[in-house]
Image (tube, rainbow, N blue to C red; front, side, top):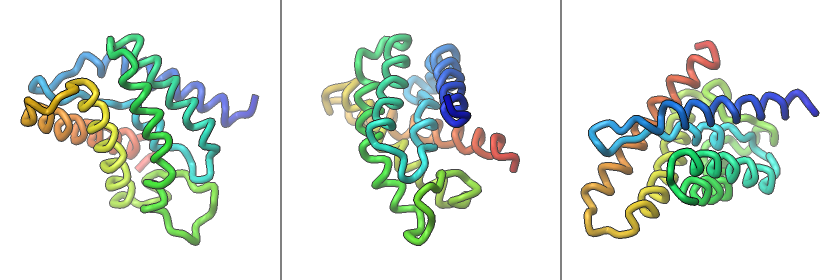
Length: 167
């Protein structure tokens, strides 16, 4: 097993544990829940095999679903975002950059990484809360959940990214 695979497995386990044991129980103002596991989706490098990315994301969502009582919602949304991630990443990565660029604060810059994180997290939250509510009768609550969870997740990811990268 390569060192990259071992690192990815360790990161997968740590992210799952943090989400399931701590962050799934956080509900600020009854609407905002941090989805820290989206961070793993954000870090797939450009040119990473799509089938592998979809498997990683599906299993991440499946683990979260099993422990958070969200039957299939996280796994569906993570798999859908794994399909969309390469196209969203291309919006922020220069065309002349290498095929193997990993999206981080160091490679993209703080502003581009923040926008990339916000876009992917917002799309994930729209998908997740649309499935959770399965109606638009309480549109204000839906908007509050989407916006609140997106903001909370983006702030958490940006803080962790800056600490992790030694800024």
